[in-house]
Image: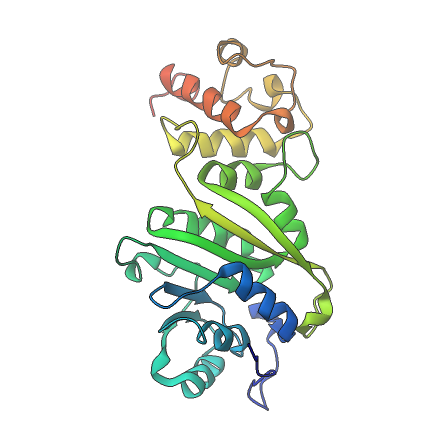
Length: 274
């Protein structure tokens, strides 16, 4: 597969407020394409296509591509470059309704070199559409990918780890050096694969689970007894089969769900119905 080099508008300067770092390395683009495995008939959307280098590679394999782009100048460039092969949605991916693009029983495939300054809220936004998504492949800051894929007990393990892994199988694929981008970011990057699936243990109240995890990791150096003092009494933590003296980072995703379900069964947060 032959990938054309960066074809951005000659007068366009990457905009810091949009977190623009344009992927230009053909070898990295080819490796991403192999990881995604796009095929004709896939219903695919790219977030933040930028200058369109990954877009061009995707369109060698799929019949049509949806893209969500915030930068009006780049949007015009993309439409001119790719024409009818592209459906361009001008707007902010953080508020975009991805259910508009879902269709058929195969599910939506989402890809993108995500702006690092909004990556975490954007991931949580996308998880809201998980029932309509087949898989997601993203370029992200390496530190974020390490947090997403972390296992209990490590310093990277936290709220993002628990909530992403509750909803998805999450696999770190490969690292990408700063030189693969224009301009080069100050951090290393990595490509990650997310595949939504039913959780191994279902939360009775997913909203309560989210609040529980957020509260626990808001004071991660404290024990469960102290970190969850405002939310769950010590006896409830014991009822869930957990040691109140453990720190939140020691709990698996399933243990957080079990604690959340015990809290829901007891009537919610400190006895307040949920």
